[in-house]
Structure formats: structure tokens, C-alpha cells
Image 1 (cartoon, helix red, strand yellow):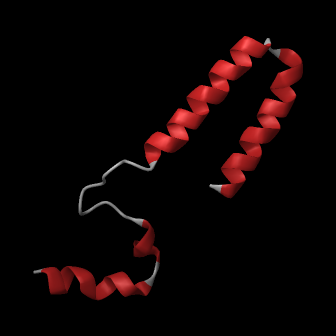
Image 2 (cartoon, helix red, strand yellow; image 1 turned 45 degrees about the horizontal axis):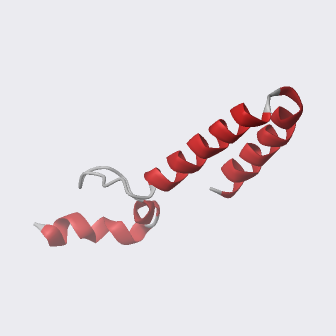
Image 3 (tube, one colour; image 1 turned 120 degrees about the vertical axis):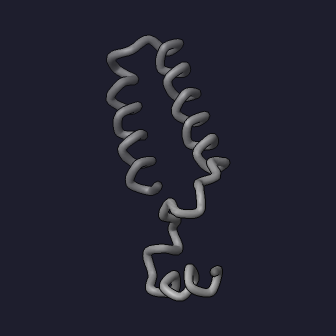
Amino acid sequence: MGITLMMGLLVFAYANRLWHKRKLKLYALLLLLMFAGAHFWIYPDRIAKAWDATLAHQPYYALRE
């Protein structure tokens, strides 16, 4: 999320010169809601999650059965 946040700040800094303040506030609010909303997504069991990036997930599926 760090690089995404930095890119978002860079875009908003550049957009600050080009867009009206009201439109910029609307886009900032939309981006904030999208970031906040993504934290509440529930993925199905067979979709990769962050802990799948390590080898620790290998025995998980066998133990689950």
C-alpha cells in the first residue's frame, strides 16, 4: 500500500494545479473510501491471501482435509 499511497499523493499534488478544489476533494474522498473498503473484503478459501506468499501455507490444505 505504501507505493500506491505515494503515487496517489503525487497525482493529487499535480492535480491540485489542474482541477478545481471541489473536484479534487471528491476524488480524494472516493480514493479514501476505496482504500478503506478494500480492508473489509472477504475472499473465498481458494483465493490467495497475503500469508500464501510464504512456504508456511503448504501443509494448510492437507491439514484442513
